[in-house]
Image (tube, rainbow, N blue to C red; front, side, top):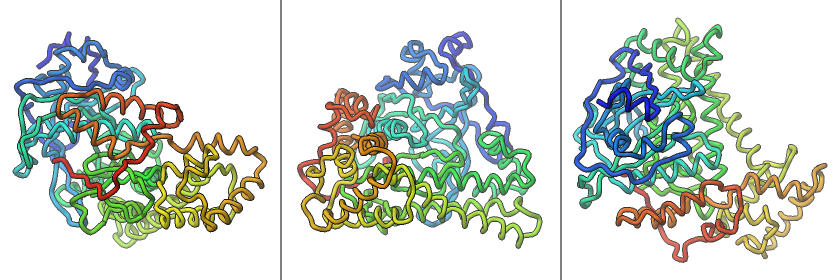
Length: 489
């Protein structure tokens, strides 16, 4: 245990509200110390926002905390229990290689989970070793921080340490632990676990906890559990629309990987789409393309239905009325998603107002992009700077006709063309974490060279800056072909 004076110096200010829930939902665990922890990367700006002392945490004592070798005063390590539908099939799960060490209360009074991922076996490990490899942990660090910079709700990464202990996957790999920060780790699967193995009273206590933690404004509502469902639907409709707008593919949208808070979580086989195609899949385990780019909105709806089912016992005393309330709430999701997505696509095309024909204009563009294998991000970037010749669409008669319609649509606005182009530049990133760039950074890091990753992170920090430095990172790889990602467990 870290001494109280050391914890105070580091800025740790823990509470453990989750541990005050019934023990059905967690198991207290002991840390699994590692032999030679070494700090590889540390997020100074995030640490400062959390009220932490960056100098103290980058010292040896901080590294010991991030490795799970020491527990700060006030922390209470535990593994959370949850279930989930994995590729449509229900399973008992839980934190099999992670532990929540506590909830940091920031100087502004906000509450964030501090979780160690790859920290060793727990009662929920299901035969696994509970450890993680360096590559996947750095991958989550890169992608989650890029998502935050893009303005997408996400868990974040505070630090990655190597353990000094190799782990066996296909080959021997360097072990590592990621410190993940989240508004909470309450998942759809947490509620599925409560509905399957808990009592109605425990389910209600979990729901009240989620409301107090994330939706305090609805605590006094006549049916706060219906309001909870509606708020979760609202946040997921916004989240998945933001994924679609930047071409992000999560890869493993199981219900245990969907948060009540509406944050993106669990960056396993995720990747960003280059060439626009709704059928794009990167994950090696998604053999039936269940979680393809174009399926993400409908899968979100399916996952929300599973969440709604868990709330039926507390939505209404009569089952039939509870089902009606849940179904009515779920019917709002497609419209909410579509509204969010259309609004986002409008600003990507420099449109300040709404017209009935906008959806057709947008969909016709996407059809053309798929037909000519146009890069999704760079097409909109070319539009933003009026450099149409840089797009694969340029030169076709079909695009010429579409371009005339688009220019006429822009001309019907009160705002100037320059204002429209600025709107596009503000809403179309210059850079995304290109798959080949991420892989190059990870390959170098595994060999001990962290400079490639550090430069990539610097470029991704402000994706809407459109600097000269970012131009090289927008270039597609010379060789095409199939790119595949792996879960990294």
